[in-house]
Amino acid sequence: MSGWKAKRFWKEVQVVPAQGGYSVQLDGRPVKTPAKTLLVVPSADFAQAIAAEWAAQEGEVNPQTMPFTRSANAALDKVAPQFAEVADMIAAYGGTDLLCYRATAPQELIMRQAQAWDPLLDWAAAEFGARLQVGHGVMHVAQDRAALQPLYAQVHAMTPYQLTGFHDLVGISGSLIIGLAVAQGHIDAGQGWSLSRIDETWQAEQWGRDDEAEELAEVKRQEFLHAKRVFDLALLS
Image (tube, rainbow, N blue to C red; front, side, top):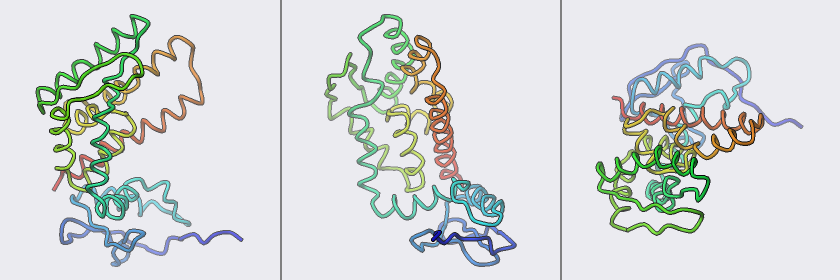
């Protein structure tokens, strides 16, 4: 027996002001999250992006075509109720940041990593007072607690909506520093994605392209770009 699927029942989609931001209404009825929380987002542009997704649905509702709605649901149902735990989990990436783990060979890859990643570590040191240490190989690089503290503070200062976008910026890239650099506009999302893929790009240059791996990477790239958009929309008022 096939599972029940929601079907479009509305004719009109509207964005309306609400306490704390903006909500989306379907024929005058407010959209709610799966946990039955009133869906209120912090900016009109965010609400418009969600409204466009609902307006585009035909026949059966397909959540996979509604990334902004899914992000809003995640912010309200998952991130907000356990904000401190989520913030701690993301901030912990600073202790094992991608940028701090360098190749031992060949020399060209070592140089490529240094040229791409050292400026970001320098930026984090200047911007936050967070000087992270670099190692070579897979051995754990212990980071100074004093260096990590301002990075933790940056993450915990975010709103639930910002943290929802930031979660994927960090999780997909494997780097708290890349996530912060993209979120704060020090580099754009495309640059951030490319900087997180130094090793994969090198491997492809040496051994050739893998179509399946590239398809998966493109999915992740789109998710990364979407995460930046969510973060930006959470900043607007």
